[in-house]
Length: 530
Ligand code: NOJ
Image (cartoon, rainbow, N blue to C red; front, side, top):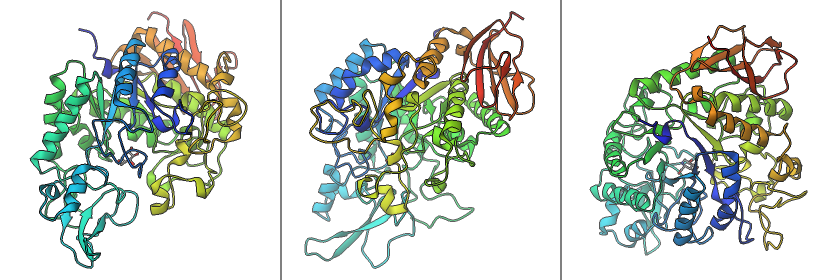
């Protein structure tokens, strides 16, 4: 039986505001994406994951959804989305859409109805609690600050409190209510009926809250994170997905405990989840190997494919992370302003690409990583858009800057020449050398490394087998085989190391020195028949 696509696909994340602007308003849109689908087909990815494109006041860049069954006019129309799904399929690309079930926008009709009358049935779809001078709990928003905001009564007096684990513009839904559950199952069907191949589930571990609203306390079950009952929701979603052959559910599950993480991937729940353990791992041979082993072990236990993620729209781009003394990522310690060696970080990013694309499972590519884009850390404060800035003093704009396509200066072909507005976030002029046009055809470029790696990945049978076998290697070196004929060697030590016996060198992330692999370099090899 053929392997289901989602088990080893390479999935490209489009952040629609920043991919390509078709109409010149400085914000990316569906026409821009349709016009640039050739870039993705040419790159050789298998699927697109589209960050939210729904009508939204954009308080959290579209993760505050007002209507899950339409498209925001800044991006296009529902008919345009349907065309894009068809055109992506025709180009051999599967399509994944982003569903945000933990919360809606304050502009969602349910919340509007809930605010309009204290007796509205929609009030029970949210977490309203009676007014009083102090919030019902001391819970903190994931973006910093309190997780409760007080409404204002029609006469101007302070009203009830409502819960929002993110911004106040994103009221949390009450997933104990059957109408909420029914609504989201209907939304899944709406998009599956339009041909989408998968759903990415935002903040998937946060949906259920302890109705007693206890404080967060060490040693006690968490009142809203990873509550056991959340699995029933995903079992129901899986039943819906199973009505549509070949569709996949992919969870955004940030959990430190690998066993609890794997619970979401049991055979009757989600198909896959993002591997943030790998994303946050230091550039260190021992820690990377432990992370890879741990990942493969916990996924094998539930029969799910691993995923390999280096970047996304929430985290510091990896060439920047890997160019710092501390190469880990965590939200608590976004290291803006800490010195970065971009040459080193980019060299490591190239090696990390060959590592992640040769591990068993699916891989995610965040738009712009194929160009080697780094985090733009000097966006003037007045131009920053992410609500995280105001609430926590750090933000995610630096990884969301519009893509550079061609030309010598901003907007680098992101918007048409006739554009009325500049890109919604400023592009660094230094990206002149990182445009698609500047890199295309240059064998030393990041773009050509991704194209070559994806071409090899498609053709090498070993890269489509489920297992990985470690080879003996010098200290600081990771070497493994996939199937009998393929090997990856990654030198994380400070000294060059000799290549193992092989038939053919398939690809190297940086030039080799004869038969020596320099530091921070990965090589793909075809092995002699053993
Ligand atoms: C996770 C998303 O990736 C992030 O961008 C968003 O701000 C939060 N969930 C809230 O929806």
